[in-house]
Length: 505
Image 1: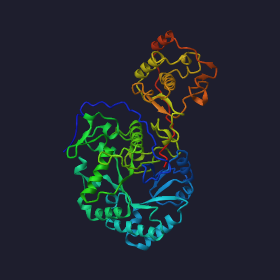
Image 2: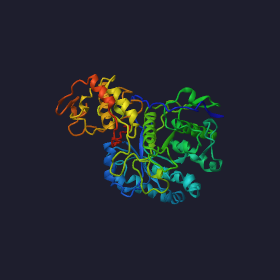
Image 3: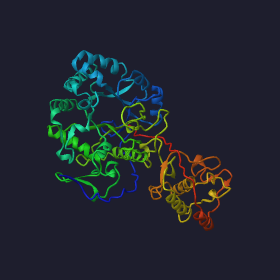
Image 4: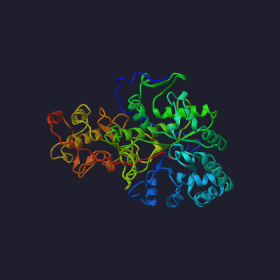
């Protein structure tokens, strides 16, 4: 049976940054190299214009997107950008296409042929979670796949464009341990021919994977760190006693459950493509773990896990490309508070939270060691911030004289602002090395320059530690003592604004 080993009393480990090396040329195709993409939902009260959406994608160097339809405006806006696009046959059109070859051919002509190759369409998702959301259309799903594929063949596009259908992970039963997983047998009459179709066309098994819901529904069995990809010591890992494989996160366990479920139906050579995965940044009272920090941690760890091409315990080294859910917060989406808060950006293109993606070399476009800063974490305990500030300005040997009264960084006179100066100075002084922006968990990385007014931080616009009114003098032990005597800081925090940068194809 599947068991979690020694999780009781486990304290979350400090988040550790992993150095990511892009091993293959950027010209290598997505079939050979794992990629990260984003889903673009449209349930917004103020949906940006397609040109604005594409401008955001280009500014963030996001090279893979998935649309929940085949909107003409988006397809035209994506033309000549090189961005690889997955389009969708909406569920409401599935019955018509699955019952009529000519309807499918017309759909392909109108939504694919009319835009390709200017718009780099690589994938067609036929429906979305059909078994869960539109079960009455499931009997025609196989025909819909075949009819769309046939239309591509007729247009000589079948080698350029893959056809599949995203499936919810809830269709996989008894997923723990992964080795015992199997598909809901009631859907086998549809799933078996779907898998055979994917096998014969060389396509992917599209799976929506949400560790957040697995965690929420586990009644405390699944630890939060296991859901968030946080590092675990070996004795805290989940062990599949049938295979003796060790699992360090829910995501990998679900992927392997899909592989074992396919093998249960005698299909062993169809790769998994994750069409949706993410974590909400806000929830209601019943969802205390839908937070900015957890969303930050999950998506940051997910991205690094994918581009490292770690694979899974069952298939190590085999890429599992993934689309993050989602680009924007969808404020008009029905359901709980969390349903509206899965986005990476707001409608104005402002990031919802900081993605911790430093030390990623060429893999990420904006969050590199050339433009990162270390700031006090929003909401951090003031006493811990004060202790970290004391250390940085004392044993840490940070020159903190600019924080003295009358100096350029004295205002605002609160522990958050002063700690941010000290943290960032130490981070730069140590060459932005891994682990130099932590301070017992009260610091965080951002690409937003925290400089303000005459207070220019080290590395800001080439200032190299020089302030507008002169260079900083040495900070002596007397100053350090006066720092420790100070107290009563007002609460406050920095607005987190950072550019998201995703994997280049």
